[in-house]
Image 1 (cartoon, rainbow, N blue to C red):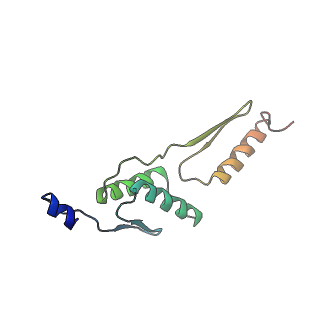
Image 2 (image 1 turned 30 degrees about the horizontal axis):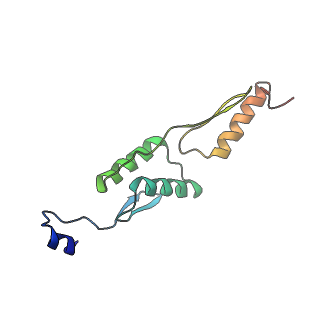
Image 3 (image 1 turned 90 degrees about the vertical axis):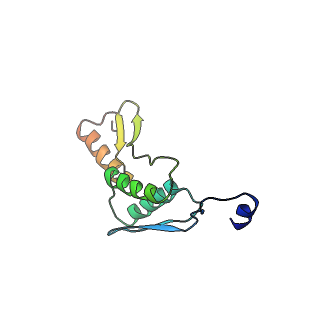
Length: 121
């Protein structure tokens, strides 16, 4: 930064300080300078889910809002449900933050109770 400001006059300092956000009861999101904040949040949310924490779309949005207040965010966090159409059966929907295996097990159970819908002969 010093060399650049010697060559071209700078009017404000570059904020190159690493940041972090403590998420109560879950852990800390590290926001190193030069890294995409959204990717850092996605990685944190995946690690939190692996550790057994449930963070829904609303809470994830709140986390993202806090992170974007500290670092400029260039892309939003995708909190849309995952949808998979199964031919002749129906659509599996996995809400954001839910464990996919649990959602699949629940969906298969519902399909079987409803007569199988092509999953069972």
